[in-house]
Amino acid sequence: MAEPLVLTFDMGTQSARAVLVNPQGDILFKVQKIYEPPYVSRAPGWAEQRAEFYWESILELSRRLKAESGDAWGAVTAVTCTTIRDTCVCLDRDLKPLREIILWIDDRPLDNLPPLPAAVQAALKLAMVSDKLDLQRRKSHCNWIALNQRDLWERTCKYVMFSTWLNYKFTGNLADSDAGVIGHVPYDNKLRSWMKKNDFRRMVFDLSDDKLFDIVPPGTVIGPVTPAAAEETGIPAGVPFVATGSDKGCETLGLSCLAEHKAALSFGTTATVQLSTRRWFEPTPFMPSYAAIVPGYYNPEIQINRGYWLLSWFKREFAAKEVVQAGERGVSAERLLDERLKEIPPGCDGLILQPYFTPAFSMPHAKGVVIGFSDVHTRIHLYRAIIEGLNFALLEGLRTMEKRGGLKVTEIYAAGGGSQSAEVCRITASQFGLPVYRTQTYEAGGIGASLCAFVSRGVFSSYEEGLARMVHVRDEFLPDEGEHEIYGELYERIFTKLFTRLSPLYQEINQILRKK
Image: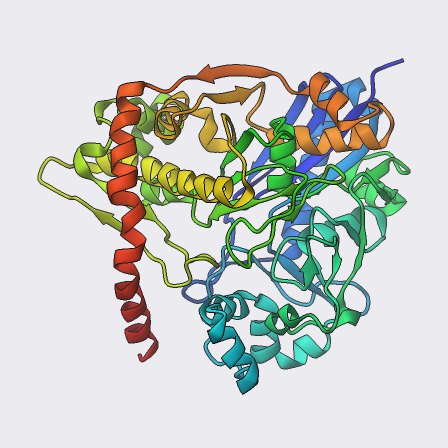
């Protein structure tokens, strides 16, 4: 008999992939679709896309993969789908989308929220979290819809995660994994259930219980692929569809980061540093650890909202020359830019970038900034400064989690598109002062989701057995001690002080702009 295979769809912000994975962790076949465009901006800061656009992408990928894989297609024993987080869909009574999806990257203003009760405001100010919760309220897209599209909100029967809607399209069942419910919804990650009605955190979201959906443990078969979905995708009807987890959670698992001394770095559109631990703790005050795919584990995380998106921004705004050359040579512009990284010394001749182009919960007033410009600096200095700035921010996040969780990380595992660059991994090792490892594929999310399905279907008796079989270290990057010393001084003496010193100015900027 042919060995069982898992078909996994990985739906990202800028592209989608479909892979066929075997129990040895080999990606036997892979197809990818770059979104054109990834989203539509009808107003400054907006990022929306048709829900059907993503289902159409799945149909295209599935048909292409079926054609390319030949006989292997018949060995598919389970289907999974992992997606971007904090992205929701409004569904009507027939469970059809009512409007475009508002993506997590969307940064539309929401300044007309009704005030909270005076007593609540006083309590929040006393706890010094009023600014942070105010940012959460303004970042909750359900609140924007409720205020600005009231009729549509009243017709919204269910408000579900992007992954939940795709699960429904495959199976006809509106359910999701407790490791996939990550976003501005009233979900308690510690208890792995919806928040109780009397939970004060529910003030952040304008969501009633009747708009929520069913939550199941990772590894649950949500249902068989329906005949309708089978006809559209080419997947045999009846194949089990297995609930897994979010893209970052799948990546962390797919990198084998199940022990506390391992940290997973995701060099994707969003850059993250994530851990796995049996102990629940808040990686920053009032931010939860997320429910992990493996039972009994949590994933504390620090996120840089505009992560390797910054390299796409740089390429679009400053690298027209490399884009043209890349087309002529038949390679990517990123490859040409990576070749030039070695031209720039560690620390970029004093150029330091703070990558907070989109504010986070722990830094509600933050902005991006570059300091240290002089007449020696070039575009490539800025390119390297972006990479170093992202790593400094991730290192700061890791140090915070180590302190709050009482743990010590000794190994770094990298995945995501940015990890394809050996130079980026080498720089990362020197900045963190730790060995950086790449596994057999940068598609770690697909490996993690497939591993969950193999455990669910009994191919492996445990996640530990699955990790031993499916995840293999391919590359090791060791820190350069001289470079690490330079980076250490820049980090301690400059980077860690930037936000505190600039924060009052960020707040002034926001106040001035809100008056206009």
